Image 1 (cartoon, rainbow, N blue to C red):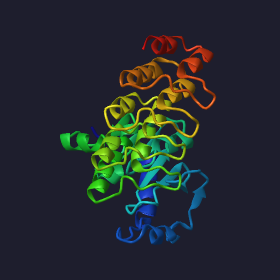
Image 2: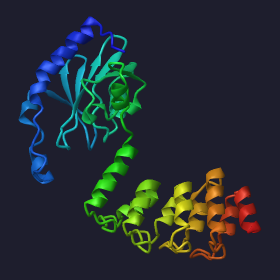
Image 3: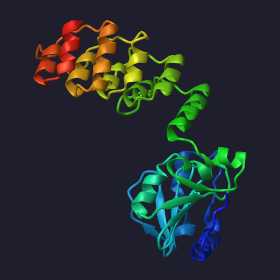
Image 4: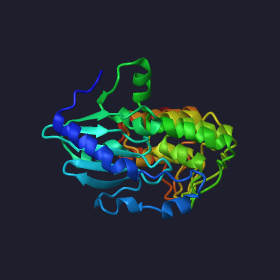
Length: 303
């Protein structure tokens, strides 16, 4: 299908493209990130009004009344998308590369219904399409496939594969003592977790709280991550700095709903020791009773 653009929006669109198309300066991707970021903001943007918006990924510029440039400066393609507002509707011209949450930015800028029009189907122009309902373009199989965009989670998996294949250390830790392996477990990123383990992740590695990847996975309700980790050599009864095992963490920090019931059942079926108490000598059953988690009490009492 082809979008039917009203005249005022079409004029604004042309104005946007003419004014800013020459402003997009792409540095050499081989430059170091430090050198790259030192050149931002680009001097070409000095005549444009910067819109105050808290983001680690996007910068916003007012181009004309009702026209906002949504700029992604911290990646070598420096994608620029444009939000063009009419009286009743708005048009997002391109949706960026999908790394940042452009839909969140758009919602902060307008409450009007938003449709997306892509200039073409390169991934740095359609990456955020998945977050929008109405996407306009030529009705061909190729365009439909390319304009469907990709979820950030899918991009993260592909990027992780490439980095690991290039030799990235899955056990390297950041200043919070999280490695890719530990972070993937804590955030419920199952496919990335599997990639790190296949690449030699240290299953005895612990986070800043003294827990393995299993502990925060149980805390945050990541059922499938817990289900997978109990099949590995991870210590199911690892005690963290608070004196909690993954089982204790699921009871204490969970709310006893079906998700946590399933996690507790998985842990118990895998052999988690329910007799291990915390630093106050309170067992998982004691905590479940205090919190009146009726179904959890039944699970702990039955096993």
